[in-house]
Length: 145
Image (cartoon, rainbow, N blue to C red; front, side, top):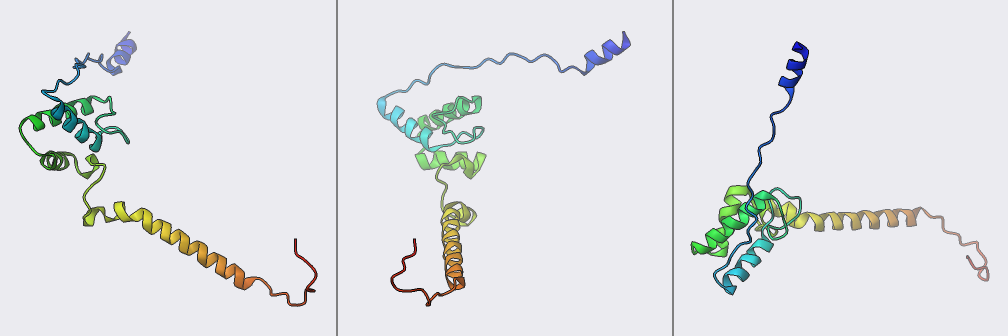
């Protein structure tokens, strides 16, 4: 009996039901809706791997969409909204972070890897070409297939 009570004490407590607001956002006009959707596509969900706020179904994305709409209604510009979210969540929230010292590798890293790979291929090909023996003794009418 004591072992059964000890085992029951180790079980996690029952999960509480969460009330999730699934009501769609209501916009005042078409301009507000368009501005909101343009921002939601440019902003990344902080929980999801690679989804925008517009695409994500995560609860945090829903909260961020509500927050972005609230900031739009407060009269903030797109740049102010992005700055606010970057201050809160970091550069990760932007699909196109600003080019600055901390993001140089993000912006220029792929090009550097490509150039480095092309240089490595060129170096390998030239080294192998120099290592091939020159056969001057081959007859002129003999073809190499």
